[in-house]
Amino acid sequence: MSDEYELLAGVPDESAYLHLRRASGLSPKSPEQARAALAGGWAACHVRHVPSGRTVAMGRVIGDGGWYFHVVDMAVLPEHQRRGLGDRVLTHLLDVIRRDAPPGAYVSLMADPPGRRLYERHGFVDSAPHSVGMVLPSDA
Image 1 (spheres, rainbow, N blue to C red):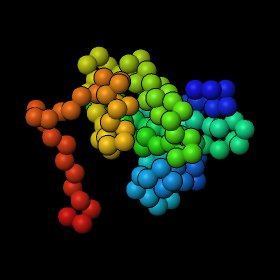
Image 2 (image 1 turned 90 degrees about the horizontal axis):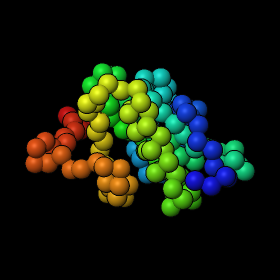
Image 3 (image 1 turned 180 degrees about the vertical axis):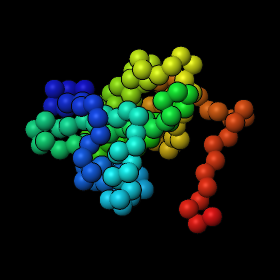
């Protein structure tokens, strides 16, 4: 990560969070959802573009602090992609888990196809056929 970027521990502000989700292709959320999400995480970091002062990347870990740790909200603005920012965010989050979580923590994530290589480089593997990720659609 070059000197034009600064990694900061903690969550971005609400407006930056909402913008990053929309602009990076994650599902948009309401301000109410953002406030609850940002208050309810276990670990987080974001990247600030020093020349502009804008938040351009983020990631969070949610979980119970004892066993389950789930990586979420990995996002980099399109114009700042391919500069190692996602790698730096994920490295920081995994370092926090390794440092602060109990031994044997269960770390998981749901990967979109564009992020798959990043997660594989950090040691993540497909859980199938042992287990299969599932979701409950919001209209169910």
